[in-house]
Length: 367
Image 1 (cartoon, rainbow, N blue to C red):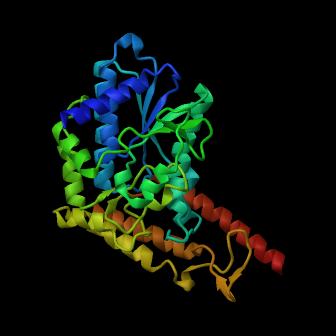
Image 2 (cartoon, helix red, strand yellow):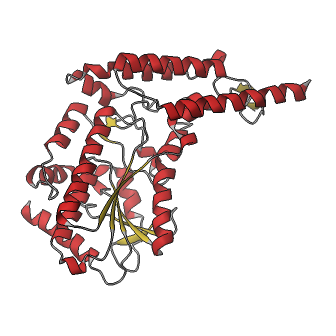
Image 3 (spheres, rainbow, N blue to C red):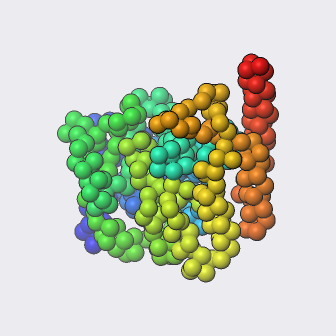
């Protein structure tokens, strides 16, 4: 194992010092096992480099959808703080950042504000707005400032057959370890742990504590209690199928793409009964999705959509959206903590007002 870890750190160190380019590195950090190992190895590699040669900036970038599983987001924030503290202590060129969706693109603004039906496999509107857009914007800003950027991802062939085929289909850039990102011009992908197995990842995390301080016991307990894995970093629609699968993964507690939230139930079963109200709300939200009495006949554009001779319902009615908000606030009371911010509620009420005006105009035009 020592040879594996030493080799990993040495490879990352060599890539960092590559004279071919000096573009910033962006580590896609979910707080899960794979991205933690990547961040940990990069941190160790930087500590092995003389300060005068630490010329490439490194960004550790997490994405908070604002509806993450509470235990997961707590772990993520604590991990980011530990990395940030370690960066200051060791004076490394690392920036820690968290991306979030725009005010009008949050889960609640779209579902309760605009009335989007809760996501499912056929209409998974959440992934693009909550995950892809915020992080892609951060990467594009770095590309604009520096001409290019290198994204470090903890993807591995061992994850699945689909992942293996996708990785094998990539072509590296100029015979290096990099390959161009399919959707982000000027961005390149570097996969330091692509050939490690899941067992090897866990063994390295258990054997080698992070150089920024502490150990990985909190991460190991999180996986054990959740009985699953993290939703992956998602930077394109190609990666989207990995978010909200039927396997045991922890991600958004509101996820209605999966049939059952096995990971959150795992937290409850392992002694965290306070999360039961979240499961009840999520299950209820899934059941009301296709109730026609709660859906408008027209799309938000005012158009009627017919498929196979049947009317395709539009968004939730404003009355239904009000009901969902009330149910969410009742869930907050049962849970004992905020689940929606005042800013989101303000945005939702503004959207409702705009929708009422638009509906009145449409009805007037039809008279």
